[in-house]
Amino acid sequence: MTIRFQTLRAAAATALLASSALALGAPQVPQDPALRASQPERGQIASPVVVPLDQATLAALPREAVRQALPESVLHCEGVSLLSLLRASGAMPPGRLPLAHLARYVVADARDGQRVLFALAELDPETGGRKVFVVDRCDGRALSEKDGPLRLLVPGDARPARALRQLEALTVVVAP
Ligand SMILES: Nc1nc2c(c(=O)[nH]1)N[C@H]1C(S)=C(S)[C@@H](COP(=O)(O)O)O[C@H]1N2
Ligand SMILES: [Mo]
Image 1 (tube, rainbow, N blue to C red):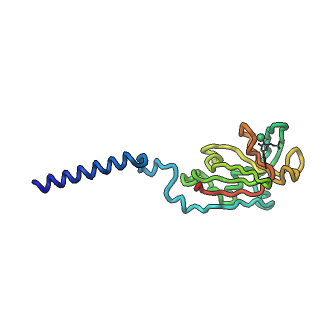
Image 2: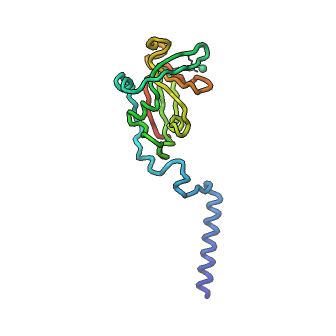
Image 3: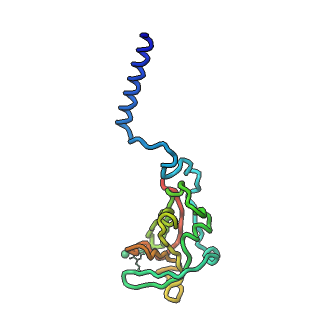
């Protein structure tokens, strides 16, 4: 009886210590994997992935017409969707975006040093549905050196701050 009582008392003390440690520590996170925004194996996804921007890659993708309002003008351009480019180059898987990719984003670099980014979830048609384009022609002619030769367009952005001129590189990474 004594041993049993002491065992119970020890167990109760351990439980009390454990619960106070939890109370002091980080908030408890649900352990159901289905509730996780990203999966533990996300480290297995290649990062960084450099997205090709060469002429042959772009020429193989469907071309679309894009209208972009800018502070002082409206551009009528043509180019390819960023989604099709990311999928064609293997940087984004086809179909429903796996949960592990919700922590990934594409960084765009311009020659003038300006950088912008888009979460893959933002681009995914089933999630954010944001349409982004890589264009090479506007208003009937190839883009100038000041604006191109490639430019991003994001017609749905309220402020066209991500309509990146002088696009030089696209890189997909997992958030650190
Ligand atoms: N490379 C680069 N792209 C850029 C910017 C920039 O500073 N550098 N400014 C952005 C902002 S804030 C706006 S409003 C638009 C303006 O486009 P425009 O210069 O063709 O009128 O370009 C966007 N793209
Ligand atoms: Mo701007």
